Length: 487
Image 1 (spheres, rainbow, N blue to C red):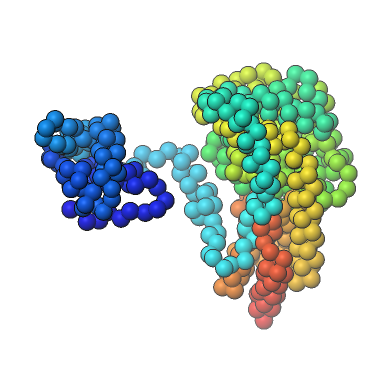
Image 2 (cartoon, rainbow, N blue to C red):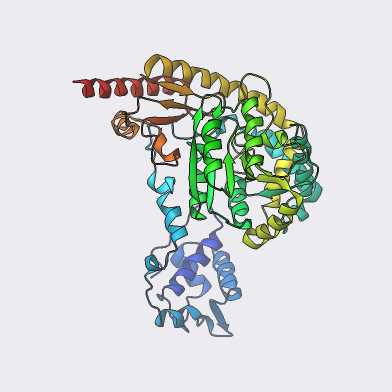
């Protein structure tokens, strides 16, 4: 006994001794009412100072694992875990899993998607490049906010959000042309919580949602978890196909529409101003409320600003806008927002409070201070210049090396590639992986089990030399596959 203790330098010694002794007690190596070694004896056995053992014993006593019999020493206390263990039983949890959880597991890309191996050229990520992160100004913003109201932001916050951040975002959206009359904002833990809250707050009249095809995989997963039937409308080079959209809207009722109009995930397409106006008209005509996903809205590399759909809706209240800075700033700060009719936000706030109480006030206040300090515009300018350069390199390489049928990507952190309909990018992925390159096959983004001839290339975190090398490998492999089919 006491021979397996290994002291490390990363934590206080007394904490390590305490946890070691606690583990011996909880697993039953040390029994209830058993006398423990004296502090001098244990310090010798563990090769630590006596003061370290004294501090560890004091904490164990405070936590109820040890009691002291004056004049006799320290003893192991009776703990409730022993009684529980004596009556333990095994439950088959798999038989108790809900359909919603099964759908979440089935569509979990971390578990069932492409896992990167060290050394591979990885085009699967569309997260921002951490090498661009503005760490000095983030640290400064943190210290600024802590000095102003540290005791407040470390406590519970409000379900609707941190007021200074809410006010900043409202001004930010107003500058995008959004009419704020009758609207309010709710802060969320990113896009996924925002969409989940919205679907939790709305009744399902028909159980159907209409969206672009392909579309955001996370949205597909969340809609399916909530039991929605998804109808996808094919994309054109300037956005959703309006003829097909109206045809579907006229044939059966939908509870919701979900659209990603700017730097669409996964195609990167930007919906044209004309189509934005027509989409709003069609949804108004058929009385279908819209969830707009702001996604990569800031990552515009060329052309003029295009107003979001919620701005095109004027003072109407039928558009729910979900936004975040995750793809631009720091996804580790899980901060997003929902802008919608104030009556809807009133109920959404209660759903939020019931499910997660509030989004981290520390994260919200840090983001607010960073924005308030004027750092966002400078960082965005630097990030856009770097991502634009990479995007142009990717497009040049794709056109030079890959036998593609169509390429799209007007901004954002990825491009989308289509081959001839009979080509299978899942087979291409298997072949490329043998040569150290991975990407995301496009079929996971489609609502109708199609898209096997498509792929998404995320470039934000890939070095230039790997972009060139990786795309050349993809192109050579695709050409070889096509050649084999022709033989």
